[in-house]
Image 1: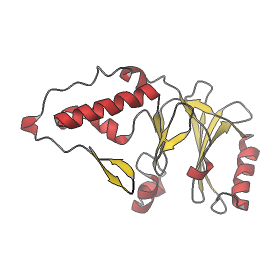
Image 2 (image 1 turned 45 degrees about the vertical axis):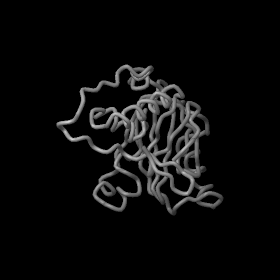
Image 3 (image 1 turned 90 degrees about the horizontal axis):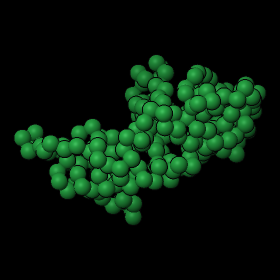
Image 4 (image 1 turned 180 degrees about the vertical axis):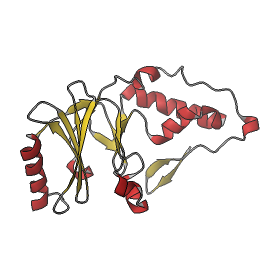
Length: 208
């Protein structure tokens, strides 16, 4: 089901089951699955400067999520009901890092441009793809990841299980179903930005 490296447990993908041995499997009996996948579900996100993203509100009341990649800034705006309304891409003069003048400049830019004030936001599931330049750059795709900036109900490994539960053997199926049931009951979700960040219902990163 997984391997331990340096004391850390790492999920592994289930081994594929030959097509002739696949079972007819449904996972729609998992408690809360429909609600976890609902299009109107709201996800609470708060700032995590060390992971490169900030959350807050603009002077006009819009919700804002800003993500930094080196000297590139992606700002995603949401309306009051959490629906994505606009995106802004900015090339900063230099790469901001914590406790640096550039880091302060980023805060000042968000404040001056959007009237930004830090706070938790509640947004619906969304995805903003990489810009064209980075989409065709293998290094940038590797650094940021194919999902770009996005929020989703499940980590990749759980989504793969849901997409093809019959591809698991009996042991893996039982284990994944139990872990997914626990994940749903805890209200966790995922934010993608150069990594897969697991967040709890309060928007706190609990694992990467």
